[in-house]
Length: 285
Image 1 (cartoon, rainbow, N blue to C red):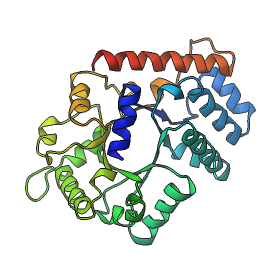
Image 2: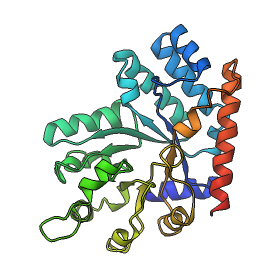
Image 3: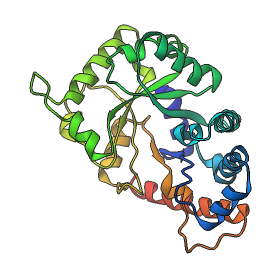
Image 4: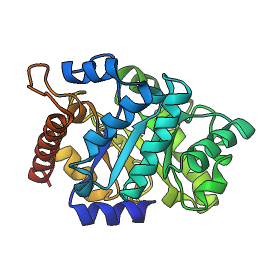
């Protein structure tokens, strides 16, 4: 996974990942009208197509938040399958952000869903069941699929827990990292493991305690959550070149005062914001 992502990033010249989180709770008037007019499956697929149609040639990866598809039941999951198939045809690295985290046969079933049914390249995994959460998906990891451990969240409530001291006085997050890396090393899977690290607050003092090797970080938080491309993100990219910055709300949500009358108008609006993100990233690279 690391090498593939590094090659894709080098080819495109940036580390931005399209985030497709089709949240219908606060929609631009144009999108609201389409949501009320179309069947859910059609709406989700049309929205996705409008987002990627003008920017996929400049992109290398996309992250789908499965919850926004799951809320529509079977038709939503059918739409998720279809958009992932399309993303794969566009040669995008697909991350299924489903945040699974269980043990034994349950986690194996989650793996089958993500990797076999939906053909995702990587799955986000919660670490609170310990390394058992990735043991069950080892067969897919050994075939080249990836897993991102939800390690240091972009939300403060999560970070407060993850940074609590363990019995040795170090943050719980450090223990989690060491345990998962020890398992990955024993199975020769370090290149298939990535780490979710909120870009809203990057604790470099903690990162300095990690084993001295490139890690694939998935860094949410750019834009709507307050993080920006700056010296910190530049440092991450330089030291960990297979890292990705997923951006969703900033990309998908135009301002309510923005005039949009058609899907073509919306696609152009997405393209405009995408180009601004690329410019901001490259100014800091």
